[in-house]
Length: 187
Image 1: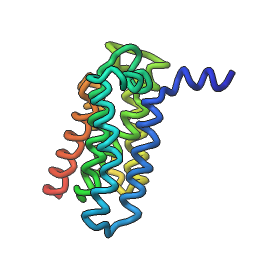
Image 2: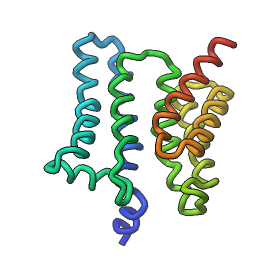
Image 3: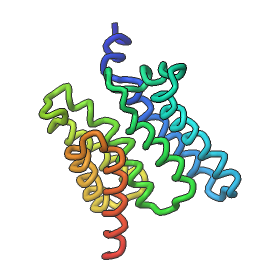
Image 4: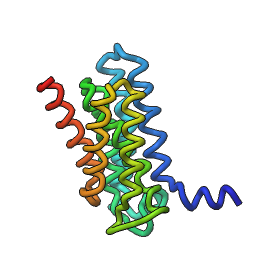
């Protein structure tokens, strides 16, 4: 019974959001002095998944992938394709704010949909935004951000998740990254 309830609440795409990104970030961060060939090899994993998910929208034989990862019956896979592309770039972009933007994407956006169990307004709920903020804040602090920095970036991520609709993965990463870089310049 627990597994049936859990499977209703935690979809495959959410498991990807919450597990694959942090594992990938750990491997990249753990091996800090990677050569170009090692970075290319690491990047090939998320890149190949993005390519496969894109191809699942145009090649009938791969359409089973859409069923695994698509939100309800919606075949749009832009979010998961972008997710893979961002992680493809991660070994090559060494700024801490790019990393923090991915942390907000993984942990903030990854748990925001759990807020829909409490309320929902136009597809996004107040509880989801609160979950997004709290999880982003906690994860950012755990990944080394200062408390003030984590508070600001977590809030930016939560607001962008709430207002960006179907493009939230792209908007969260770009917005948090830009705000972080601007904060760094004005310190």
